[in-house]
Image 1: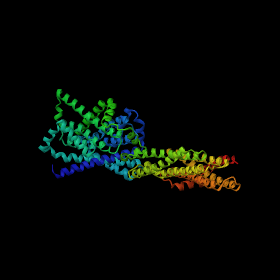
Image 2: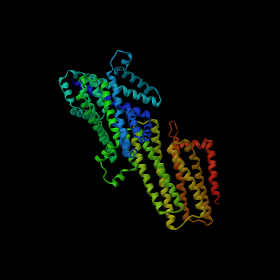
Image 3: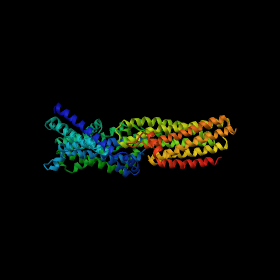
Image 4: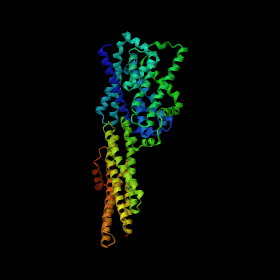
Length: 592
């Protein structure tokens, strides 16, 4: 085997790995944000979690990626450790799909259908169809399918190149002697584990083994322990990913390792016991790529069937290996922002969904903070005031952490829907944070009146109650519209915002009348002006959120342009504005 063959082998491996990556990415993008929703719904049942592990891994073409993803979910509190076990077991079976795809290399025959299925024929066909879809079809799903087909073509071509590169090893005596050593189960497992740990992909290492088998270089007796070792080596990726995670996340990686080590040990013990009593002449024969895929599948099915009933014991064993230390530390790990785990950036669809959930929490927090502040204007309570100020600080942290994470996500290749969702969140988190700031300003106004022992007149209190009612309505609408991206609800926000402006102007005018009549003081007037300004600006931020929702769809204008069009041309806007204006002003007029 000369330098040219070595270079070809390295190049073929590179094409195989890259083809697997872009094919997996394309499949993931086509699934959009559906995977994470399915994941959350089905993992409560271990059997469904197992099936989901098979499906997700078959889609993203990597059990290592699935396990790393699960480590991130457990670390962020999305998934319990007991739920993760089923997915890990399913992932080991799902990863066998790649081996079956690569087994096409071993197809033999002169039939036209078989000829077309050979990599030398199928790869260029897939590449041609893929590039046509990618370059000339505008639909996003078609482009993603084009990427999948081009990745598939690269994967097949890389496999073909590797098979050709290793073929000269047939005539090398040293390689034949080496394979005899690999027939030793301990050496075979070690080699398989090291190779997979180095290239960080059991599918790729199985592909290398299949390339050797396609060239007639590997026997069954050598291949079986190597395949078992490859399943252990794939645990390295998940184990390395646990740096900085909580204990349950580390336990998830340990369960993955235990599953494969125990499965390998049991499989080899059973295999060699049977071999001792039953003649197996085929073991000395050369394996084919399809044989390698079959052994890989049989091993993973055996390990899963053996250990699935004992999943709870694996959880307990992982707890012994990674024990708890203190309750205080455990509580610290249960952090709201743990779901912003950087491991999830490897699967951007999941990361976007997590951010959306967390931004909804921020919206609900901002709404609660503002409603509490409005209550303080009517009845001051020191504990409630402290709660509002603490929540305002929490909203600042939400904005910082979400903003930083969303910027990282936006640097990844996202679907159109996910891109729009990220843009909406980036536009909205500042508005939610500012709503909390205005709540803090209202607390300061309430504290000032409380410390000075001054209060508004009964008329002013009743009028502020009407304004508070309108603010409660617009806050609830803004939060609900953001959570569900409901365009109809977003449109309903703008007429209410205009009515709140009118209420502010009316209350200012009424205050001036009371001031002239000596029923109010200049000092209270300044406080009332601050309250009205902050309330009006909260409504403005709700309007901004509505505009961001309406402009987040493809082809939509900027937020201010969308809202401007509503004012000018939408008859329903005028009708709703009139209805709300009459409703709230009838309440104000009752205070006369």
